[in-house]
Length: 161
Image 1 (tube, rainbow, N blue to C red):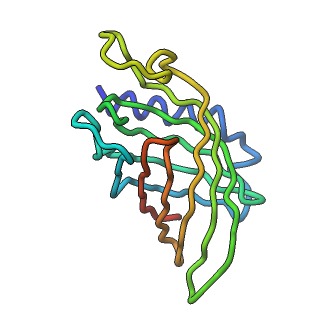
Image 2: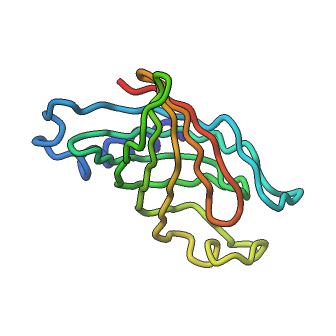
């Protein structure tokens, strides 16, 4: 059931965000990434530090990108982030490229049906989001660090094709 949902959302994502003229462009690539480390600035017993994030991004002209990620949020709830954005090359040093990334989109999955959580995210359930981060890459491999609001940070690794 979960795999079917993921596949359905993936194909919806492709049809909404990737018109034919974008997919056919030269210098485009796919970037697959996953989380390897998460921490909360003020840890609580109920906080989840194992997001199991899986994401895919389509990188195309002028450093633009579109992506979708699935993860378990801090409250262990399945959450989706569908986004657009841009990455910004900063500098190169010792064969490594350093960059920044800014994405914006829709976050869905914060649920508070039981009245257990009293955050604005749980009151909304689905809301607009902005995520920024800094990365280092060498060849097709990337490592990125993303602060999430004032709560903590997540580290991801990935490979670009």
